[in-house]
Image (cartoon, rainbow, N blue to C red; front, side):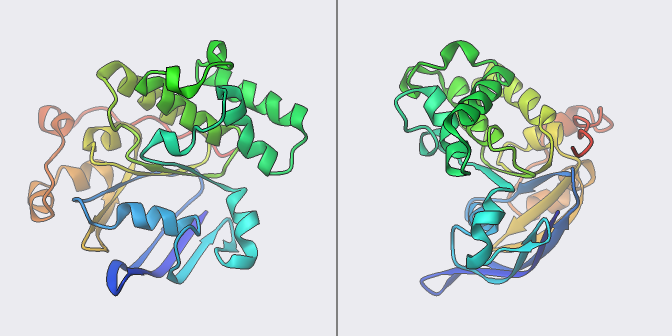
Length: 251
């Protein structure tokens, strides 16, 4: 589904992403972890063609280059760290319909998709509200709904658990576990990664420095310490633990 080869991103002669290569098969859920400044957010932006890069990225067989961006973005949905970046219309229904309308759907079709996405995320009673009247957890679900309505094959999450209370965080885990498609989730919440992902990439100083099964990677105390991370509480308390949410079969 996703192939990345020798990806590099630079800002003002500073290399934010340095020669990153990896691939994600259809339906896999992968965590992306690392200390502040590791290059995680920049990597996600590059995958959606939102920042200039060198190297090669292919999504669903399409190379991420200018001539293909419209087609690529039909397959990719990115949930930004700040939900406000995705919620800017007068009502939640219009926020969620915005993406499908930009894909070229008729208004009736776009609104139907939007209502379906809101319903799936438990927000059907809030369709006519402004996002400013929602809690942090509701805004996070609403941001996911804006992407869900576009029916992406590849989901990119940037710090989705930021500012969520325990109940909202638990709901986020449920939402991520129910998604169809391939997921790449960047987060400092390593317990969230354990709960939702089967595989984990560790980034540091712009490079992928480790890649493997999520419990093996995040349970390696020496590896975690060497990259300014900690073994997540969930693994310290229950090293065997139960498996993360089961990935749905690709649709």
